[in-house]
Length: 121
Length: 395
Ligand code: SF4
Ligand code: SF4
Image (tube, rainbow over all chains, first blue to last red; front, side):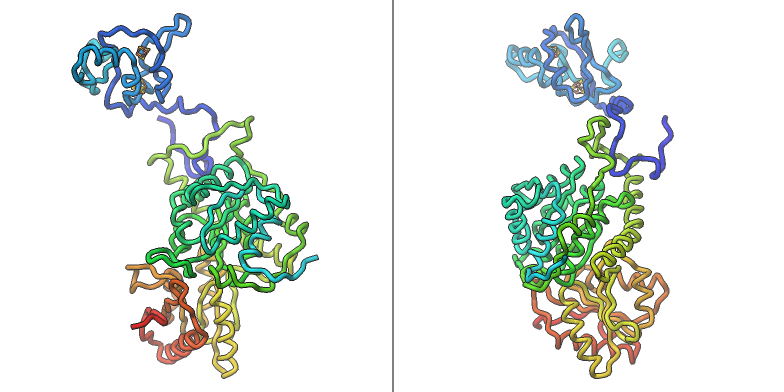
């Protein structure tokens, strides 16, 4: 935990004078839902990477693969699951409403603390 | 060389704006401010200023554009009245807390409803806790002079706060008067160049304005605003001293009129203070010891200085052109602040409040005379008969 500064020692007006210091703020602590990979295979279209507001989609740049979620910063908004075209396809094919934690999806959103041992790593 | 011109208060302010030549002006028309910005728009199209003039679709956008321009490092001005200010309200707070030294001409008008375009001070009193520095002006000359000083005050590194300069809608805003307009070069020289310390456009030093601020730092940022307000009073006096010297004026935190040996005084802001001075002269001719104190600066409120200037009196009558609905005895804000100042400085004095002129209702010299006569009676008995009187409202 960093020592909080007094009012004389911080920039006025809420200004942040250091560029890019948002990395110091671990927004993962806000998360109520966690994104997880499901059964439907990812096609590495990078839509989730493009839309994630917290740059929390992990990518293997060399092999052009979407490889997971950066849980230190992911705040669980579920945008990645909403924009994933594979999710859309699964839902459309099944012809039924799917819960957002349905394992048949490509990205599913599971309530924090409600997944098994192997997932929670 | 300065010259005297016949100008409305609004045109006098527009002339100050031309001389200041701000980088950005964003405004939306609203009566009775409109003619200020209309006149300024003439200056823009005539090529007399270099200002980027932004015609926005609402006052909320006007103040938003001002904040954006200000953080980018521009010198920014705007003007509004009443409901225009009310629509700006969210961004009025943001301007102050983002520490944008925007200067706004506020031509006072009654807030709706019922809709009314005439003068009272309900508009400015709505932003009294917003973190803006607030000046009142008796006439076009004072509005002109205050606008010029406001630039220097707001931009001072120890302050960095927005400044609102008030004058009365129609009464002085549209009333034509003799105004001394200083030489363009002298005004330019007085306001100088704005050198922002943290411009967003300084690409060598990237920075963020307006981020999220939780329970961990929000309070510290508010504390900084308090400090800026505390610094403002000295800066206002420094700037006034320099202005007075250069332009042969006499600005301070407030103006005292025949107050030194007075027994009772009226406290009143903006145009009706002029009427009150005439009443003071008349009553003085009768041998009555009456005076006037006209606050120029309302935020920050110079409590101690006011108390020092008033403590020799036997009774005070405050005249408020707005009501703080539901406040103690439904009094006006000027009265509430003043009685608090007297009480906390240990001065025991009978003080009465007279609410007047709501929605542009005329205030007549004989009514002000009645206020003085009542105050003289109070001075004798030591008792305030009625704490708050609503002058000239029909029963
Ligand atoms: S849940 Fe939101 S924050 Fe987390 S990876 Fe998906 S889009 Fe990004
Ligand atoms: S949007 Fe879906 S399919 Fe596309 S990369 Fe992300 S997880 Fe894979």
